[in-house]
Image (cartoon, rainbow, N blue to C red; front, side):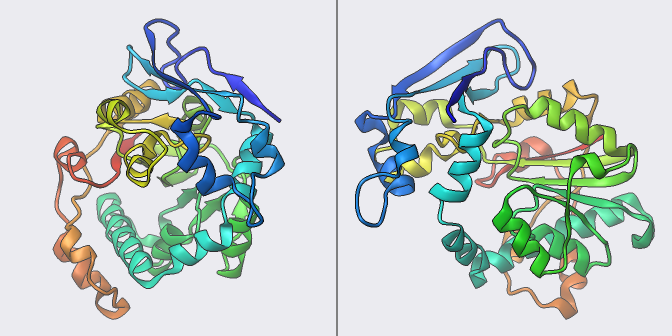
Amino acid sequence: MGFIKRTVCPCCKSKEDQKVLLEEYFNSNYFKHWIDHIASKPAGGYRPEVEEILDEKYEITKCGNCGLIYQSIIPDSELLHKAYESWYDQDENLRFNLSLDNRRVKIQRFLTEVYSFIQFYNQPVNRIKVMDFGMGWSEWSIAARSLGLEPIGLEISPSKVKYASSLGFEAQTLEQQEESSVDFINTEQVFEHLDEPFEYLQNLVRLLKPGGVVKLSVPNGSKIEENLKKYDFNSEEGFRKLNPVNPIEHLNCYNTESLVSLGKSCGLRPVELIKYDFQKSRKVFRPLNALKELARSIKHYNIDQFNKLNGPTLIFFQK
């Protein structure tokens, strides 16, 4: 268990013009609030595995070729698994995601999204095959199923797989999927976590049918260079402002340009699909009038205008 060094950009694979923006050690005051927040034991002190990382370096690098900002020193797979399943309280995470306000806003937004794709694809729902890659707490899969689709869920977190199973979703693996078999792939807050985003996206493209669509939605990193100069991880405000480069967790930080570059490098093109009306999406979700409410909010959108909002960086790509 430990760290590995990424020596090339994980998205465009460029070795040239990789500029280090920040270097700090985990044992510095720069990270004190973050360490206390995610890694402390109820009885005091830190978990043993956290003690082991304190002498490691946190390094933020910017790719001059595609604009991606990324952690160049990252946890290996064993440490990543330990961090997600042990350092973060999964029960607390689930309670937050099941809270009424948070849950209904998410599902309403995903209902809008799923319904929009059904309209875009213009096929009977029983002929549309969709996949939820990194399904998390299953909100997108719930929305897809409520509109008549049968989503394939992919998830590796044991706690999330168990929860998905309780809802009737069976988590599968990439290896179980057939090439050119899927019409739409959802990835919601996934690609910031991946050690090799280019390779993962290539695999997803392989599964898409010709004309199929993949959604990439990630934390908005458009202001991260500015925020790195103003904040650190030793305050609650800094913790929020620097979330797109959260240590251990958010390995890749995208803006619109770097996300478009990733898609194009895998042979995809951005496609306009929907525009969210965030005011409507905050209404209490009522299943009986869901389609009526959703139909009112669906419009074509401009990618750059959408991503200037305070939401995630989100782009739909077509094969």
